[in-house]
Image (cartoon, rainbow, N blue to C red; front, side, top):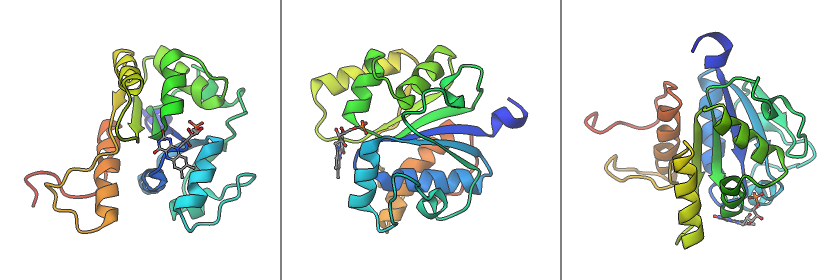
Length: 200
Ligand SMILES: Cc1cc2nc3c(=O)[nH]c(=O)nc-3n(C[C@H](O)[C@H](O)[C@H](O)COP(=O)(O)O)c2cc1C
């Protein structure tokens, strides 16, 4: 991959707990100078309000404030089904759903749903591009587990919001970074989030 293609990522933020993972992901993508196309579900804004101190205006979300850094961000509305990311001709390095709700998981596993998020997922899968899913729920229902299997069989990679402890995290941020680092690794994006095994 060369040029602009290598520098484009799509991020869907849905209404699961752990919006801090999305915050850190956007921060890291901006730091790596990646062109980042972002879509929030309506429920993501409810979680933003519940879990963050950053002011949330769903009509005009401030991505620089959300990510803590100005990045090459393009915000798309979930209702904007004619957005660039809805087309297979829009090439990108990968799409990440972070965090991913069980509701979105069900919709994308069945190919249903009429929002931009579901359309962008469908396009990512049909074009055989990388789809990374960061689900957040516990315990998982059998339906959710089956949906995860379905999406894995369709080519997605599931990166559970499930930090390891071998890196001896000292803060919540360290634990967030552990998960976001795995996402960046799968996108082949260089980062310095946390130490790798053997680097201690
Ligand atoms: C504060 C808060 C936390 C939530 N946490 C989760 C969660 O961890 N996982 C999940 O699947 N749904 C969670 N939900 C429920 C979803 O937001 C809800 O099912 C919503 O309809 C999902 O819509 P979306 O998939 O379009 O974002 C949470 C809702 C709120 C308000």
